Length: 408
Image (cartoon, rainbow, N blue to C red; front, side, top):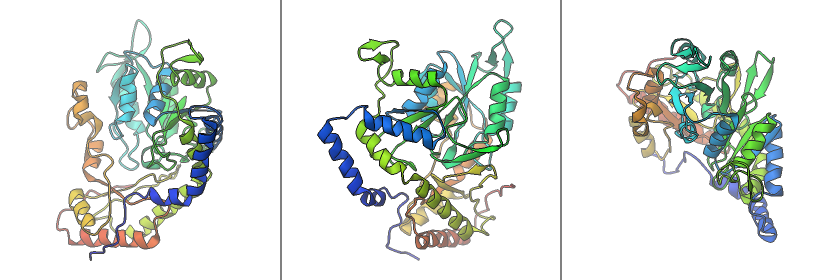
């Protein structure tokens, strides 16, 4: 079965070769103008990405982590607050919470989508929180902190179920900051608004990462905040630039979180191709689904919820003996990934939060089963056929008990 032709988990070379002439020209333009920080390229990206996300404003920043941190701070999340999110996400989500002085509180995920389970969020708000008699604020029974915000994560390019989350947030007067770092161009059908809405346009603000491997990736670190709130956008603009309202006039103490112009120029070039790339990812996901049909007894393939237009930043399957499959695919020169092997509540960095194994069983179970297959726009059908043939043969040879099957 061995084939020497490598199928990479991710291909960052091909799109840059295809766009090399435009990218080099943008770099040369920056050299000629010595415009490296801010300026027309950053402003142009902000305008174009805001339009892409159907929002009024976009603020370019140095990373997706900066975007989350600045959005939380600008929205009013402060020292001593609690922010609700999920344990099945990259640590940047919770780093942003703690870096504004708040504390993460977790709720488990929906097994079908790997995103925040609105029912579990409702249970947390009803059973694990109470109103302060003195202030009327919603307080966490676990920590005694005021609960001020929710960060739903649009994971793997699939949006969270936002209508019930937004309804709960409105009922309890909570801020919603979307973690859209993996969801550039993903859409959600809001029954409340009776229309499709872009990831990044539904909460008070949203954070995007332009890390090189994202659907829209820079050639280095970069990120952005999207919002319809003009005041929040203005605060984020100050926070990214040492709190300056104008040069050397510091209204607040901020950060060095600016987006450099060369990365903005690269992103503007790539943004023109993003709709096509996302459609190609959807096509690749459909092909995977067709090729893997019939494996329900040994593998679980991603669910596309009827209210979601996912952009498949990752194509994540679930198998019982994940490590065995990874090793055997590697022997076939097929790259894979794991996103993410340890839920955040069980990470050493968060021992002080006091969570234990068993607190979030869905996240814990999925963390042991998830496996990301190769996924990128230029992945060929022949490559996908080889990947799926290898997966099928390896699983067929396995004598272990099958993973639990999801019920849609």
